Image (cartoon, rainbow, N blue to C red):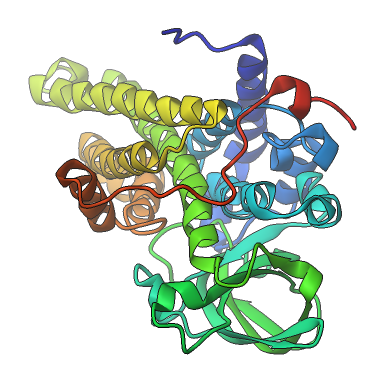
Length: 404
């Protein structure tokens, strides 16, 4: 068992850290106050290759492994959760879904521009009446010759107004005995007639990012843009969530680290009762908890990343990592605010933003309650992962780094 990062993984980590700390950290507070993403963020991430970090060179990516993706997410969320969300959605929920389920022609035509950052991608699953209950999806797709006609509306879609592509889950068979089996997946061009979208405002957190809604009215999607077979939409969505949850777990680990660093710095500078508050045992207890949270969360997401690299199904391990890391990040952020006292309640310090953002992590990509049920199901033997027709390919450096 080797816990040492490879030279390539360390290089990826350092590159993303420098981008996040040097370029985004100085402006993130103002972006949060204004409620929008700085204009340079997505183009710069594309320029640095971050938007295709773990995709094969032959598909426009950087040829790095899944652990490098996790490390990138940790570094991004150590500055702000909205940065990590970009990778969760663009790579985790969309591009890795194409890598797993798309055919070779689709990978060349659709995945390549996403990996290069020429096209920004999002994921259309959640609806106003369908969140954890995916079988309740009402969006429809009707086959008409060599194309589909799509209708419906998705809510709480990250990058809704920034994206060019959306991996859209719609119902193709409303009469299916099992509603899960009546869903299919499509890659939708969002810059065509019949697409309307907008941003949602008034969010508790994630204010520096884009969260919105997308509506399709008689939007035409060619048969060549259906991903997988008809009826595989639920399986594709769940596979994409496995990848998205991995990025969320890694990102939440970065948020814990940010809370720990902010708390130790403040505790050693703030004086009360004649000494630094870092000497007070209850403050030390909070900091010690953050250390425990960080180490455990990091080991959990690295295990999931290692399993991905091996090509081993990791739904259970990723669920556990996501559940633990997001719950721990919310608790760490609350404790960080407490350590900062009244200052922690204002946006003069970053910890209040950490707390607002951390609350999102225990809701999206499967609520903490959903993950508790999943883990209990595995332990009790009620839940068993059936083989998929298309598994996420294991990392192979020779394949990943070959141009052709």
